[in-house]
Length: 329
Image 1 (cartoon, rainbow, N blue to C red):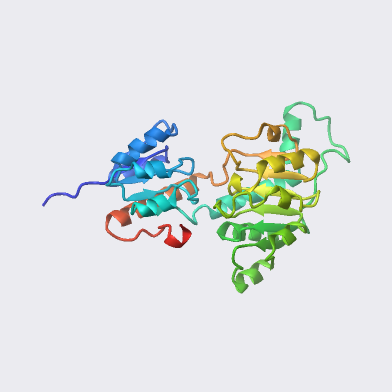
Image 2: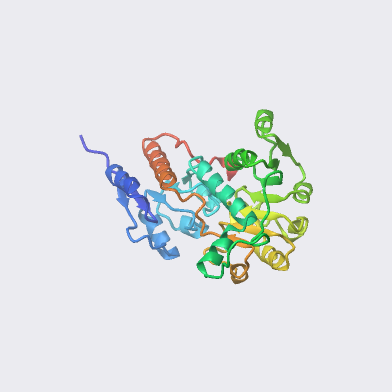
């Protein structure tokens, strides 16, 4: 009996060793050992030979790549939760299934969001820089004053898994939970979180002390926090973003932060990353991180295991568990 040929699986970036080893065992895996991001031309080459393409959120799988893909490419098993880097309509038109890795990064991202919230409100990054620069002259009653978060109102934009996990953490810190979402969450979730729902995003923004961005980037959420909406925020308000940079008008945000029209921001993502607005780099009231909200060893391994399950299930002729359903396209 002829042994079934292993599918060619092209992985665009370096993944944890344990994940790559398992892929080599199960598939004809083509790995990226030096972790150099693939160029557009290299992504086309990969799509022309792969049965399964495993990109990450930094690989833009646009319509051109999908159009030029070989007929054998039937699955794009993305290593990441967001799918805004993939032209889903083009994939659907070619009959290519798309999967992602939802759920496994919830707690890690919520941890980082809470850390950024604390860091910007209590000026942790500024204080760390002060010590390292040798300019700290000792404790003083008015030195490095920040703001307590206990008793403050937190407005969560996007009350999905991560938004709810953040709400649980914030409640433990004594914050009042408010949220705006495309759909209102179930009553039992609202009761558990003691969360106040705002149908109007504008009305919520005008009343919050901290605003956290936890919604995905889609055409509908591009610049959802526009200059007009940013101007609704009160001057003492802080913004935290661990979702996608494109949700905020970064130019407008930078301008308002520099003028003191917003108290501060904690940003793990940027509109044009890895490029960061040079003006943001010069602001002391901003904490900047290199898109590391989900960067835990455990999380990355869990993501890899989900990718493997999606591929194996698909190759075996079944619907993969994390298929991006048509309603999301």
